Length: 419
Image 1: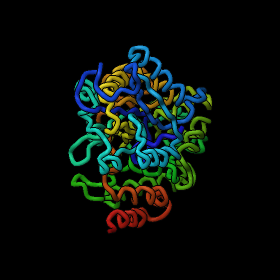
Image 2: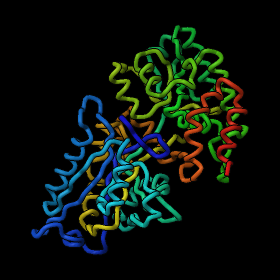
Image 3: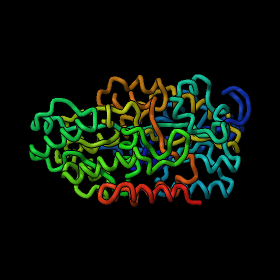
């Protein structure tokens, strides 16, 4: 599954709506046929196949559309599902040719805002739906204080641990602090576990793994004032700790060369004692046959994190075609129905509304992620420099557990402050 959640991490399917002006759901907007039927055109990203579910994207949207159209026979929805690698280019071509969709789901909205192509969120979301959104996520949909992007689904991170390996090593509960994590890793190693802690710092998603560890020591990519702080004392201390784990043979060998998917597959195969992951890790573990694992908050230096890495994709409403009322109906249907549960079942992605979280709260494996979502932390993706810093982090930060952490982080700080 390819999730292009904000900042390159991961998250969600999305839908987009368009409002033209005012008017109720029974008549506003341009009519697409003499019979009064309006056709909404939607473009959605393909998240790949869910576990054991081929053609999941098209099947998912067909189910949603069929259910919606049964209740709203005068509104037809045509969905085009496009691969993540191609969707941005194809949508750009549509826009250039003046053939914008009514509804778009993809990984970013900001480029369309500067061209004046999008409706404001308060034009396309009913107050009851908008009020149910996780506000920390919704805030990131704003440009200059006005919301244009609508979060659709999200993901978060937590600690997975192999209960059988813990029992074998005499560990009775998951670690809550860095000291406890190191002690557990030492016991796992003594019990013959080759990778006590899975540490993927390869190019696939090094920025996520690094950020989780930084958060555990009160650090991050920026400080509280919004200034870049990649080489802060807290972050240097964090990577010095990680380097100690690596040097002691308590992690994945050569973490800077290992991607998360490889490490998650190793965890599923019973080779790894502990690993940070998300709901999207679960299908990989299930496919490998691993059942007896637990999920817990990620350990920090002095205690478990009360936050997590939050990631999301977006939906947005183009303002050209004038199908306001019809799109609003579809949008309200999407957020207030059972779509969030269906998305979770298909892709192990998480909702962005309080109501959606409540519907999934009985799932024990998802609960640690759901609990962490309202207080999530995010990449500084609204800063234009993130486009330069993020790929450089992916390429080089793995070296901070092999070489001098302060030097490696200092070079990244220079990238952030350049120009």
